Amino acid sequence: MSRLLLVAFDPTDALGGAGFAGALGLPFDVLLLTGQAAPGIGAEKVLATGWTELPPSDAIASAVAGLAGGYSHLASVSAMRSKDALARLAGHLDAPMVTDVIAAEGPSQFKRPIVAGSLIETVAVDGNPIVLTFRPSGFSKPAPGAEVAADNLNLPGTSAVTRVSVSSRGGARPDLTQAKVIISGGRPLKDADTFERVIGGFADAVGGAAGATRAAVDSGIAPNELQVGQTGKIVAPDLYIAAGVSGSTQHMAGIKDSKIIVAINTDPDAPIFEIADLGLVADLYQALPELQEKLKK
Amino acid sequence: MKILVAVKRVIDPYAKVGPLADGSGIDTTNVKFDVNPFDEIAIEEAVRQKEKDPSIEIVAVTIGGSECTEQLQKALAMGADRAILVETDQAYDPSSLSKELEAVVRSESPDVILMGKQATDGDNNQVGQMLAARLGWPQATFACNVQFSGGKATVSRETDTGEETLELPLPAVITTDLRLNEPRYIGIAGIVKARSKPIDRRAPVTPGGTRVRSVKVESVPARAAGKKVASVEELMNELSSRGVGA
Image (tube, rainbow over all chains, first blue to last red; front, side, top):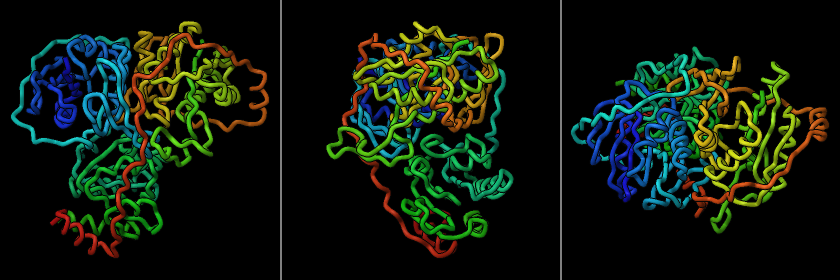
C-alpha cells in the first residue's frame, strides 16, 4: 500500500509536510521524534517516540526502521539532522533515497538541485520504500488546523555514540528557515563584533533572523549555523536583505525562493544585483541604519 | 590503525556547468575533473592524523573507470600510503555505491572510514551514512574536529543550531565538512613519491546499478533582475508598494 510516514524532528517540522504529502498524493502519518502534539495538517495518525530530546542518529535510524513496515515513503524536512539520520535509515532498509526534493511529479519522480544548485535534476525512483528529504519552500503551506495529540510509542533511543557536549548559539532570534525577514551579511562586515552589531542589531530591530555568506563564515565573521546557501540553510522569507553579499552561485541557490530580495552593495557589478528585486548601490554601513529605522516604524 | 578514505572524481567544482542540449545529463565538454573537495578534506584529515601517529596506514579508494587513477594519484601525493581502484563502467547511485564500498571495507578491515559529507556534483549526502548502517558502525557526519585515542574517536560536528561533540567507539564512519581543515598544496616531491605507491585495481563484487535514475537535467529557471533604486527612501517606497513595512 502507498502511504507516507512524515518523520518530524519536532512539531514545527511537521508544518512543512502537509504540502509535500499533498504533492505526492498519498495518505500520511506523522511521527514526532520530539514533542507530544502536532499541528493539524491532515495526518491520519500522529505518533510520538516519547523522547524528550533527540538521540544520536543511529538511534533515530533504528527506531524509525522498526516502524517502516507499512510505508512506501519515509520523508523529513531537509536539514543537517535529517540527512544524518534518514540516509542511515535508508541504509538500514536498503532503500533508495532522494535528498533535497523541491518538487514531486507523482509518488516516484522528483526534482532536486545538483551541482551547488546550478542545475535541476529530475529523478525517477525504483523501490519500496523510498526515503526522501524535501525543502518545504517548494511546496504549498496550508494553514494548520487544531493541534493533534500524539500516540506515544515509547520507542527505545539507545545509541552506540555518547554525546559529550552541545553548543547552540541560537539565542532569541527566529530560526533562519522559519523567519519572515532575514538580514544577511558578507565579508565586508570585517569581524565578528561588527557583524553582530550591524547585522545582528538589524535583525533584532525588525524581529528577523541573521544570515551570512559562506565567505563570512569561513573567515570567522559569523558562526557556521548562520550560513545561507546550497551548503548551508535554504531560506524562503518574505523579505531577504543581502548586505555586502556579492552573490555566489551557491549563496543564490539558497535564497532564490525568497519573496522579495533586496541587495545593498558598493559594487554595481556584483552578481547579486542580477537576481535581486530591488538593488541599492550603497555603503551598507550608511544604508542599513537608515533602512533599519524606517522598517522598524 | 588503518584509515580508509573514500574519494570521488567530480567535475571541477569551480567550473560553470550547464545541461546537455537534450537534457540527458551535465555537459562536461571542456570541463576538468578533480577530487571532490569534501573528500580532499577527508584525505587531508587522514594525513594530519598520520603526522601525529606514524603507525597509521592510509588507504584511498574510489569506484569508477580507469580515469579515476588521476584522483587516486592526488590522494597518494597528499600522503595516502596506497590506493584501491574498483574498476568499472557500471553506473551507481549512493545506495549501490555503499554496497560496493562495504565489500572493500570487509576486505580491508579499517578502523576508521573518512569521506566527504557529500560530493559536489550529486549533492546527495548519503553514502557515508548508508555505509555505516550496512556495517552497523557508529557515524559522525559534518565533522569539524576529529581526535583519536584509546580505541575511540572524539568528533565535533556541525549541527543545524551550532555544534556538538560525540564520542564513538571504533570502527566508525566519519564524514567531513568544509571547516575541518584546509587541504595542503601538493608539492613536486609528493607527486614524484606518489608514482611509486601502489594502486590496486580490482573488479567490482556487486552488480552496481541505479534505483535513483536521472530523467532530465535542466538549468535553474532564472529569477529576473529587478530594478535599481537610488536611495534608502526610494527603496522603502518600493517595499511599501509590495506590502512590506507599510
